[in-house]
Length: 449
Image: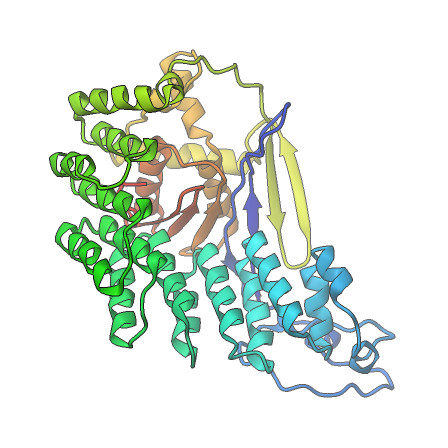
């Protein structure tokens, strides 16, 4: 049986606390089910048989209640369940033969996307595939977007490849999916295939291809694509100029980036100089960083002052962890990190990381405490706790999927790269910027995020 296990630790802003959230997917071997859990009914009623599902996922076919048959639910209105966000109940009814209309599928895909639930998304996908709306372009586009947001770009590509008809949004979604997962070369290849098939790229297409070039530090390719916008009658906007600055900045060509900014035919905004400042900081160009900072002070004094304004002392937070199994969600609140087993696993993993060369970067701890306490604080960042808990509760080599609504700190980014090599798993972390696919000691973002 396939199931998705989700561990969440969200950082929702409030006046009293904030909360971190993480998810990971696991697969367990199927267990023997009661006949009714397989969609059969031993009562005197004989339910209408439906074709077997090809995906072989018994969880898609829900059990019937003692007094229910598919015929009784044929005209059920899903609106109430969808408004309540009850995806499982809707899928149970669909498994009993209730037909979903176009708007139902739109709502289901939107709910799965909001929940970032890969397992639920796949179940909806299977019902959609068997329905009369299976080839609809808009629904397939939604499905691609859903898989991308769940970090499963392979599933997104399968949907894309099977589409008999695509529009420009389909291509843009696929390029964006590769970009957000750090796969710039694949995104660039899709863009080239798009043009070969006679699909005319729009402004968004070029913004995405420039982002793909930045990921692979493809300066020559990026500049060529930027110039080719004229062939399609597209006037470059701020997002495209900023895309070129990103390409040059990622490649470390800061002189060229600054010269490009100074020659821009449109007014240079705060975002451009802020981007240059950030790249100067990354590449250790202190003089250029100070110069960009001075320009930012003139354009927007709050940008320069932001680093100098003392932050209020953080209140003590308690971890909130969501463990989602098949049809049940449990919430755990604790001031100490998870369970004793997870704590032991994390301490052991930290020791292995140090042996592999990990050195804690305590610059990411803002509290005024000694170095040892800072190192301990880094050890218990939410994403590391989620990984430790996932390692003790999932089979070996299972991919862990972690979702967090804050930007991953630099120390955790370095730590998880080392973790991935030690445990021999792919660790997928989604922060508020992008997906990070950690595998064999490397990250798909190339350390730029």
